[in-house]
Length: 196
Image (cartoon, rainbow, N blue to C red; front, side, top):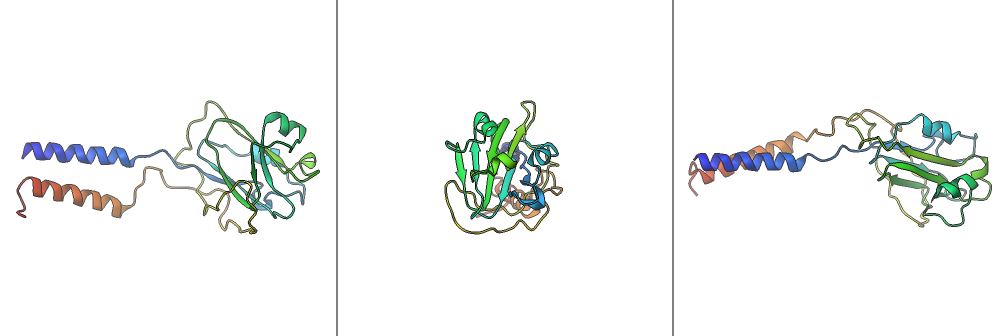
């Protein structure tokens, strides 16, 4: 019986460790309620400076794809507003980009003249930054992302750009209950408490 209990304890520990994943990131709508536009002259530099980004966060660009797009570019292209050789092109009007590395991530609108009047943003994650903390803003419904696609649709994110999120370690109660039930069933059968 002791051997069975030791095995069950080890199984529980393994499952608990396997269930603990990295903290989920936040979702930020670029420009907040203004979105990705030149109308109203949004200040994307000030917008980005007011946020604390982490690896794992998702940046959402919402815009009218008849008039705008999103290009991920190098620092030199960003500074020169050069849209000729982007790293990636997004054109759905509702693009989600998950930030996977620390450092600068440069984006601009590739439509003529838009970048030069300020439609560009530098998403910066300091080298000392860790993965998104459990208190990071909540994820809104995740729009599909795409590169070089041009589906129409300017769907909106119905929630604020950032809202509190429960701890990333929180697991749904039914999942925890099912785990406990499975372990006790294993122990009962293996220990001979229940005959098959």
